[in-house]
Length: 307
Image (tube, rainbow, N blue to C red; front, side, top):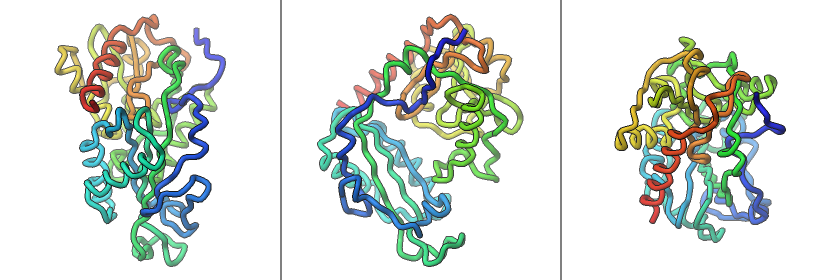
């Protein structure tokens, strides 16, 4: 039986008073959070026309920077959004913002690029004529221990992650309404996060993270056709292959998910977050040996990458 008293999210972080005075990068200026503003005519605010990327800073180094930048630049290219900066210039902006905040470890960053300020409040991209808007928000951010101890409660929702020709889920776009609707549906069902199916009814992803199950010693995740091409997701797949943990990218249904021995989510913020239940059904016996082994391997990988 599920015993959660309060709702969790996969982005719950320990409270840190330092975040009240963070400095934020806005188009080259680094200003106090109270002074960080964008125009109401900005295409990101007005239409969700933009791309974002989440990164983590450990030991003064951005974890898996190249992989995150490949995804970011490819996403921008897909929607014909000129970044206006090279990858080294983006890295410099990130490092300057971190330095302005005195941040070196357990830092989460949201890098956002919109098509910029529009001349008129209408849809056409050509109305954004003054160049892109880049915002970098960094916070001291460490996942609460409750996430790893209790796990997340999921509810299957009717909202699906769609086909690439509608809105490709591989795009980390500012327009997150699809996932927000799913999250609202899960909340209405008394869960912490939504488990979303693909257009064919197979288990796919959650509204914020990639999804894995463990069955009889094997780790399963979706084919990847309809989910975010998660950096952490791929690192987990690679770690399994390198450490002789059977890993399958395949279609599977709720039948297999309900009967899993373990389940966990992956994401840049939480790394690997255990799943406590799906649709009120407890997953496994809470021992989670394979999830814990993967968590350990991932921590070692991050340490190697950032020291």
